Amino acid sequence: MLLENFLVLVGLVFAAILVAIYFHDTRQTEHTILRNYPVIGHFRYFAETWGEYMRQYHYLPDWAERPFNRLDRSWVYRSAKGVSNLVSFGSENLPSFVFRNAAFPVLETEKRSYPGKQIGIAEGPGACSQPYFARSFFNISGMSYGALSHAAVSALSRGAKLAGVWMGTGEGGLAPQHLSGGADIVMQIGTAKYGVRDEAGNLSEDKLRAVAAHEQVRMFEVKLAQGAKPGKGGILPGAKVTPEIAAIRGIPVGQDSISPNRHTDIGTIRELGLFVNRVRTVTGKPVGVKVVVGDPAFFDDWFTDCLAHPEGCPDYIHVDGGEGGTGAAPAALADYVGLPITQALPLVAAARARHGLDQRIRLIAAGKLVTPDKVAWALCMGADFVSSARGFMFSIGCIQAMKCGSGKCPTGVTASDPKMIAGLDPTDKSVRVGRYAKRVQEEVEIIAHSCGLTDPSGFQPHHVTQIERGVGGFRNMGGD
Image (cartoon, rainbow, N blue to C red; front, side, top):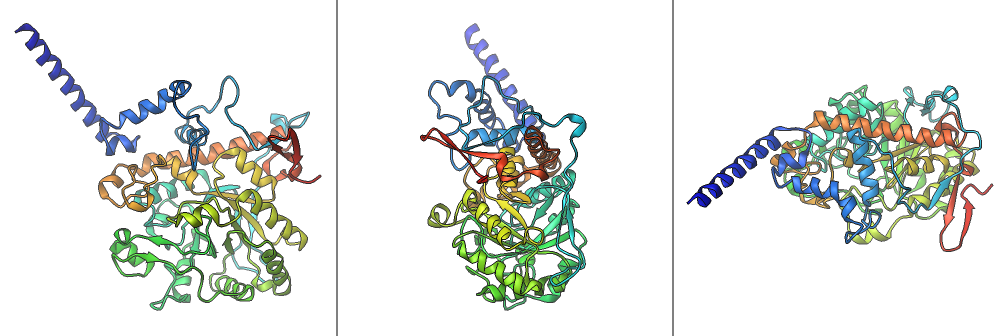
């Protein structure tokens, strides 16, 4: 009898503890997983905390996961939370490149802030009335409203403002949530021209002017392709096309939103130049082009046309590596089409230099560049700026569940289920966005100082060296 009473008491105490944990989890705002999965969500954090110690026995190594390994994701998580990223007992990484540190690194008194760069010119053919001076070399790449939840977009917008970085809209059009945080916005014009299209799907200059009238919209980006699916347009399942999304994009409610595989009015380099000039003339703001590199000869032809017709020259080129992946895509395109950023960026930078367009056309690099080493590498290879999508998704709680297209993202980042979205608190996550962006900036500056540079604007190809594993040698990536 005593034993039975004792067991009942233990059961009641255990139940009371579970109830207390449940109410705590559902009311806190720091952890989306715990809000959406109270009590059982703690098993994730237990595994995350103790996994480092247990993996030495039977778990996969930290660098084995795809598409992002645990080392990279953990670095982003810790940075976003404001936790130390210092490591002990050496590195677990097997880098493909290393930076050449200087014998006499920069002193604290010699360091200076990143000076920023202007995008767009104020005079001459191809000029715009409102060039944009970008103060951060690391920014948020385009992710469409609808593909991302309203809570996620709000968090990113607020966080971008905190960190002083720009935010791309993706091809889904400009939503109130993009503007709500006060960040600088890059409005992307995809192949379906969502947000700036007429009823026939053609570019509407009236809608274009209306978008450009927002002071926060600093630039426009013509998307030819993205790394996740070169040669195929965006895909948003009908379940995600709510009345709100349909109104923003200018499409029917509840139907799959599938963009054409290219702009119907851009089929040649000359037509591309005419379109760029048209958008810039209507908006008065810088216009760039997002591409995935296939045939390198295309860029020589394009830059030759830019010199012959400077009014159609883009103000920047956004080079997306074939390993880009925020969009839902056929596996064949995601896996096998488009050069990776490690090959694409140097090719475009070299072509730009051959044609003397280094100061006219800015380069933005994207494609799994989520940590300081990769951002610094891109700056060495000729990028003026780096943009990241998935890095910022991790910063607001993405756990790489690979459920982006289903609408059932467990962290609410890409969810369409209101219950899942409610778990993501934009106020808390915006702080994490800002912390992550600033940590990347700070550690890229640390690398620059180690290389003897006062700030990252001085990076050159000779500051980084590729490691050729299995050969035993090293190769200077700059060719000096």
